[in-house]
Image (tube, rainbow, N blue to C red; front, side):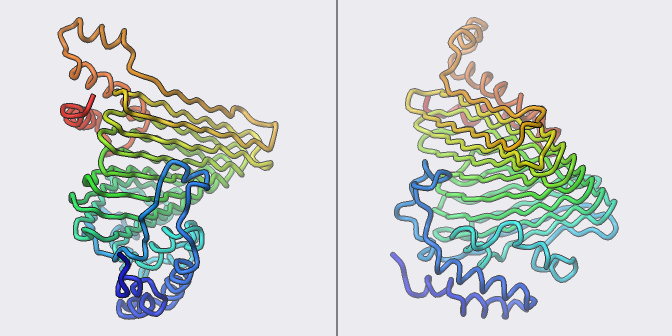
Length: 406
């Protein structure tokens, strides 16, 4: 039930007062005020919108969910002139005013508006020109304290010209119901290298709606990877804006579902610069009555001559109740391309492969554990992502499938 006190926390006056109490700069207060106005004016998305086709938000009113705090831990070996830590602290040290909230606009939708108005658990990673982080930045966001409420994590990554940084973002929560609306903005300057791993370890009743958007300048490279195994509903929207000539991006994700879990991935490879390259590979293995939906767009503009893009979504149905939907889309506005392809598959376990493993002494469950781990390794092995250990992933797959509904 909506309460007056909860609704008021999203009102412009309350949002601005909270910003003032935190001694935030005037430009940030103004952006929070704009976000509060957008939150008040924008409706919740409906299934009439293609990216939301498979997500039923009936009964979810963000205005009735009280914002809560998260515990954020950042561990990093920071090179000279760089920064990795609190976004609230970093905006006063790093020139973030012209970056924060400019890729993911508060006016784009109600979830992003809520995040822009209410985030308090932000992380900033800044790599100045030529700087190289010699080890991944380890970020843990634990939303357990937001039980029965909402968490609004925000991450801003700025890699200037020829900088290199890898980030491992681990997301955790308890078993109480939590609504998460996350926002991750990545700016990759000329010839910068950024790797970002999102490791979902949400509790059983967490509903996560997270947006990741990156802007790539000339010859830059951004690699994104996602491991989705926890949560009740995980909806990730990952977008790569390949604006600079010769820029390259990768989006790779694996999801392992059981019971009533629902995973929903939306990807965009937006090629506007010439000679840009991108790849998307999303794989899901689904047990119980779990579900996966994929909607991917490869867009090649008229100015993106010589583009090379590919997207793949493959789904392995472990049980008869599991379901997957796949919808890859190409929008090609120039004939001068190297390659633009898309591939999708939904199907049950290969019975011959299963029989082969069983003939070697494995029971059905153990055989499936091996098959799913191998199914995922083709994605994991291609990422070169620090913090993404194949042995650890295998152990997590085996642990989940040990009790999954087959």
